Length: 411
Image (cartoon, rainbow, N blue to C red; front, side):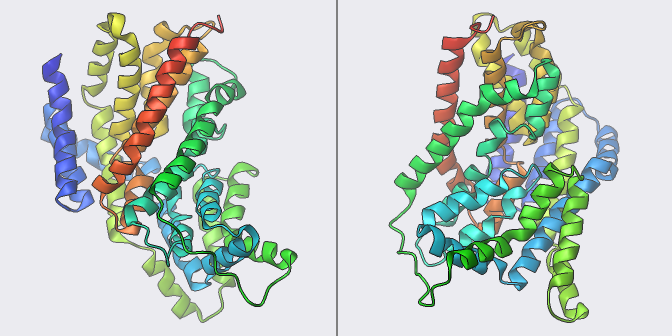
């Protein structure tokens, strides 16, 4: 068993080393993915076939264009100076930079879409532009608060798949995981208290506006984001249509000539970010079609008295490798049906499996939000990990304590 685990850790170690040496993220992922493919039984012909299929899959193309529209929307909002309008109104209303940098990513976190951390990133940056806050800390704040809801949000794909696999009511899964949303928010606030340097006082405008006008400016600053949330969560439009339609509407309402405005669509085509999106999907295809999954089954079978460790380790590992919530839930949870129970699932164990997998997603070097946020702020991933790890460990320890105390309580 030690040899397969070493085979698994080697490509991950290679990825970390390449990223630490500032090798291009797409190239680093490609090298790591190819090495993992070779180590876990994929021939060059098979990897070529999987690469072609992964790049042409509808899921990959949809993801590519969703992220492209996110990047373009950021450019359109910059051109309209929407972010300054939002930050200015928020300063007057809340009188606290800490509230703004929490609120912006937390609101966007209600929007279940890939690379969603890119939307609040400019707001956090604008709010802290006059303060000595490191790129890594900006990344951590934006990234952490963007994901506090994903433990329990009923529109999260991971929560939906968890309910389906274990035949549970969706709201039951939401309720058993809700304490970890609250815990994540608390950890984020405590981290800001520890890590943030003293911030300059909010500079209030001399020409004070009425509260009604301030709330209007707050809305006008992020109306595109609110519209996207409504289109996806209320009208149930696919994210691609919601993003594309909103970008087009915002672009049409932008003053100026069509030719000059058209350059915003070119600015949105950021090669590094978009190419890494494609490579990540290929990386995921290699994982799902290699013997990594067989290794997971073998570990469960040999767990014995170390079942708790395996329950954390396998979902965490798949979450870490893929960076996607529906991957760890859909791939690993069926493996644990005999452990959790099929007719009356142990809710504490369901919670533990989900939290473990999601912690892997949060730490994953192929998680879109982490990569894109770090690249946006020009932060080193190693510096971001130094801030992330204590928060991740705190959640993991409390989840482990909870499952030991409460497993079987619902039976």
